[in-house]
Image (cartoon, rainbow, N blue to C red; front, side, top):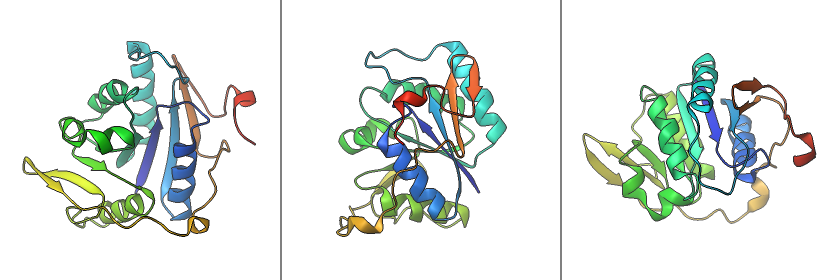
Length: 191
């Protein structure tokens, strides 16, 4: 099963670097696509940017697309999710935590709370065609009805989690009309 994490928050985003490492170490095929540069103005992507992202994702042909969504990236996440209605799209992050029903108007699966164990359990279930409607921290739609699962306990030993992956391995950068295989702004990434 192929999965893609579309990073909407700049190439040094710790969430995407961490989830990439976690998902990779769990044995899943993961590619992170850094979409655009981090900007603090809320500006929707141009048609050129969306077309380039679509071309990139279509070439990867993932089974699952994941995005961490906050209030500043919410409308970009919606624009991106509209490009891939034929894929399973998962939203996680602050926006699904504070506004889950609104997120579920646009996607069928959200992760609320800590996503560490949740995303691995969720990807395993999707890979094995198992039900996802009882996975803790997951809200999903089933026949138009929202399934609201409880939170799982917080991870107590953070030393069990892998370090974030800031390498260029299995990472792409979509900037304007170009797709690059290495960070075009290496001065801004962590070592």
